[in-house]
Length: 339
Image (cartoon, rainbow, N blue to C red; front, top):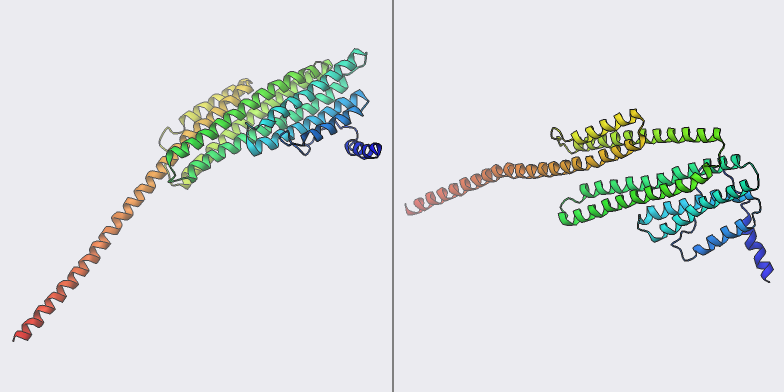
């Protein structure tokens, strides 16, 4: 009876076959570490690994598992933010996948095999996955910033203290996500470096050039993203019929000018930091827009009140004039009656 049950169970877990090292997108997250039944997901992976006998295939299998961990992290971050308990478990498992792939490669090398091609294949796949991992956190942070801006714009009339508290919570979560992203990237890179050490000299040089090009593109995107956010802020001011004070964008412009100078010097990591600071500087500009918008609304209300007052006075004058005429008519009638 046990054999009858075991055969379809193994078929379920092994049907996917050998893992492919090419990464085009992330697999479905399936169950996440927060699920009570997550152990079934892990059991399936352990069985697939157990029945994969070729070392290269077993190393490539870690790519698939790592992709699932990243998908799980993405789902949890999107749903519940950085403080989700399951993220820490997924993070540990993800780093374990990278570390185990490196361990397999190093073990194969000790047997005298040339592992440079396998190392390159695994390294390239992990490079792509790391980009998707970073994108997960960047998207989540961008969404939180949009939520923060919407909160400030849409809760007019709500208690200021309540708004400030909610905004502060969103800002704290943005900082938490950034800290988690940087920490996970550093740990991921540390494990992946063990694989990169097994590349041949030509591939190492190509890998370094590729990393530099990726950093250049990310820095360029950071500058373009900051400029786009500036334009959106200006358009928002125009939409609300608000004129920004002279110098409102000076801090942003100064930081972005510095970022461009640093970009030309090839310090791409510093560019990203400065571009992010420039985006943060726009938050104070958004505060100015909100304040001016409220002032405009108050001015409009006062003007409407003043515009209504003459009409009321005119109506009152007409009424008084009518009452006076009625009294005069009454007096004339009394005089005629006396005659």
